[in-house]
Length: 464
Ligand code: FAD
Ligand code: SF4
Ligand code: SF4
Image (cartoon, rainbow, N blue to C red; front, side):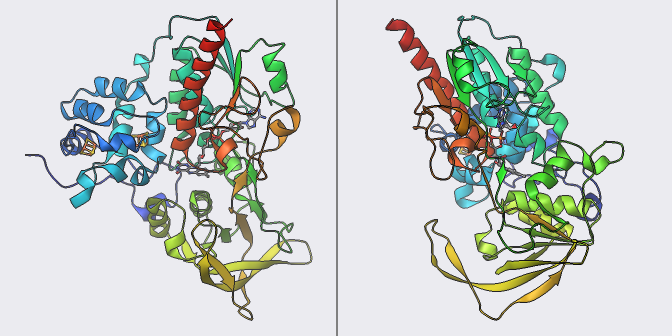
């Protein structure tokens, strides 16, 4: 008889982890993983799979764990998911696969994400993938090495294409490397998954900015590529647009987290890049990015870290788990308030923020209740650091340098449900198309587009 209690993920204690950058969630032990796997009912129609954008064969891989065959579990997961250790850690499982799990109707769903992470973590590096065979002689360029580009690249290389990924940064991985902090997603884990893709045959060229170093049109003509997949993400931060935002001590979450993650600023001066973080830090926003920035600021030694959000707790877009973790670590939440201006001293350093209370009005276009400011409620919160985490949009470089590539008014590339853009043989997906979203949606888009590219090139060959 299977144990019906969902296994609890072991974690570092909050009072310890708030002082270090090591991973918070420690992963299941083999005994826990097998016990959790035995909770799966191996449902014939597998409703959980309908919630997975990359179609992981969930009951099949869980059955492998239940019988202790971890290698087979890994093979089953990686047949459709190029980044299982990543997804097992940061996928919003509670809204994806686990939301559809039959076990969840009367109790707690099977911990699919934690089991996927377990299968990936058990896999030893030496057993890495053999190169994909059957080359078909066609070349594909993938622009951007985030989860979307890497997924498209992995699927296309398996289909026999010669695939090169061009990445602007010096390290591949996109937000997985520069955005999500080490304590949620260790960078060694991301790099291990990328090494597996390289072993499969994916070429990755870093320090290449498409739109500057070379263009999409050059890839299609001079470089002889048969198709291009654009997965350049949404890396352009939005700002509040209030007075004083140019004061010293105010920065975007994007810059703050990139310095910490990609440039290892939390290990300065061992690493060259510094990061400024004072004692009283306000983070503006309520998504995963805001939680990551706030929790990073705590780890850099801040005494008070506030999350200032203009809506209420119910409306926080961040994953519930991240909010709980942030609270446990001591992040202070202040809801229903918005900044009206930043205040500074005579040397241009930030000293405080003026806030205005909000109430929630009627729902807006997004379905969430619109915050309305309360006149006369202005008050000042003394802070020395402000981190703005209110959203990102795609960088305009590709749009500006690619003739015939349509974008919408938010700067996102226009693509159909298969990822085809308005330019022949150019496909796109992930945050570059949707705006800031999730890892698994970006991966799903990469997978769909890889299939569509294969169909289009096969048809083009058949018809002449
Ligand atoms: P990205 O990951 O942004 O990758 C795009 C890549 O393209 C980058 O490496 C960029 O350098 C490169 N690039 C851009 N322009 C060019 C160019 N012109 N030439 C060459 N290369 C270029 N999602 C979750 O599901 N769970 C989470 O917990 C979560 N937490 C997050 C925390 C933070 C701090 C952030 C910022 C995002 C988080 N997200 C989370 C969102 C998720 O990371 C993104 O939705 C996802 O990474 C999008 O993938 P992508 O491949 O479309 O783009
Ligand atoms: Fe669930 Fe994400 Fe894994 Fe799919 S990839 S099974 S959605 S955790
Ligand atoms: Fe197992 Fe839940 Fe999927 Fe059923 S729905 S196969 S119980 S994970």
